[in-house]
Structures are given as C-alpha cells and as structure tokens.
Length: 340
Image (tube, rainbow, N blue to C red; front, side, top):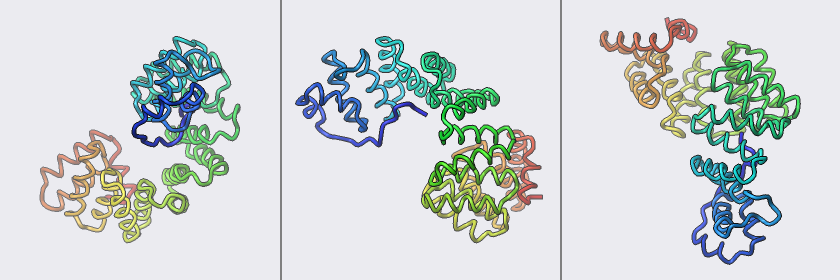
C-alpha cells in the first residue's frame, strides 16, 4: 500500500565508516537504494551535510530516509522525516502518501485520510493512493466509499492486482460473495502465484457454502506457499466441514507447528477435537486460542459445550454466555458447522 516501497532490508555492520568514504553521487544512489539500512545511513550522511541526492529537489533525502524507515516499520521516525520532506517540498505527493501509510499503520485514520487526500489533490490519477484511501474508508466502516475508490483505481489501472483484491475483500464484508469472487477471479488471472488471493477466494467460497471449491483454492495456495500457516489452518477447517477429520488434523497440526500462536489454527483444531468427542484436547486448544485472542466467539462456544459435557456446568454456561455476548448469532453460526 506504500508508494516507492523498497526491497528486503539487510543489516550491515560498520556502516558509518563505509558511508564516510562515499562521494555525494554514491550517497545519493545509496539513499534511494533498495536496502533500508543502507538507505538510512546514506540519507543521514546527506542530511547532516545539508545535501540532497544530486539532481533531486529539496527534501529528497528526508523523503527517501522516511521511506526507508517505513520499510523498517519505524513509523514514528518515518512520519518525522516525511513531515520535513513535505515542509521543504509541499508538492511532494509521494511524501504525503507514505506519511499517510505510516499514520494508517499507527491507527491514526483521520491523519492518514488527510494525507491521502492531499496527495490525490496533487496527483489525482494515482491508483495506489486511491487504494490506500479506500482502505482507510474500509477501516472506518464506510464500504461504499471504499468501493468507489477501488473502482477508480481499477478504471485507471485495469491490471492493478491490489485494487481487485481490496475491492473483493470489501464486497465480501458487505455479503456480496458473487462480486467478491468475481474480483478475486480477475486478480488471480493477473497474479496466479499470489497465495493470499487463493486464500481470499477460498474464504469467499466458504462463505458461499461451496466447501469443495474452497478446498481446491486452498490446495492451489498451499502449492504456491506450502508453509503458509493461515492457508493450512483454513484448509484444515474446510476438511473438517467436509467430515474429514484426519486431513483436518494433518493440516492444523502443521499450521500450529509453523505458527504456534495462530489463534485460528488452535481454535480450529480444538473444534475438530470437539467434533471427535475428545473434550480434553478440545478444551486445551481452546484455552490456547483464547489466550491469544479472547474474542473468538465460536471457540468460546464449543469450549462451553465441551466443559458441560465434562461436568463443568457453571464453567460451560459462563463460556456460552460470553460467546453470545460477543456475537449474537453464534448459536446459528455454530449450527451451520454441525454443532447442535
């Protein structure tokens, strides 16, 4: 979602000595480079000598260092540098977009929206910034506004995978599964090796009730990314919904090995054990899942039923009440998964 996103960072030692020996041209190249740590060091050297990369506008060193900090997930430093870049060059739309991304990561949605809008005032046809602004509208629970932004981005850039993925996710949240699947179809045509898209479309098929198609998509995703814990967790749960507990446990065990704190995988494995009548293991997995994410209503619900089956009526009733308080339709949801 961030403009001018740089590549994977590598850690370099004794960086200051290497930077000191570089010419301004070399520093300029390093400041704009793909290694975040090297970029920070080179940009800092330019800033300390009150220079920008040769041939670049005022504030460029701050801009590139801010982008590097953003790549390093140091959002506060990114905001400081990008603010200075904007002060020195108010027409730097990319600085606005990147600062907006940093604000969005911090949950400061009003500030993010303001920056994305300011960027679009300078560069109205920038599809990534439109997607960024749409994502803020989505986070603010304004789905129609979000979809309008994604529509504009797709009209401007018909092969922009992220725009199709974002619009598909928004349609799915609205319950329009057919349109969601249509957008994921388009995205997968453009990026068939993007495992997140196989996951997203698979989840849309789950929402539609077509578990067989969902498993096919999860299978494709796992072929692309065999160590993706989320794909394995979702495929495991889909196998459970098809009544194949053996395959379900294979996938869920693997997912938990890869990501021991994955609340969904733990909760789904506990549910599988619950359906097999193994209440002790179901409760143990539910406990672990709820330690990570205590707001999992379905997990609370089956743990309550498992506790009741083991004679802990008071504990079970407390779990059931908590589940209903979190999600009013949890009984209906769990009935759909075969829990009566």
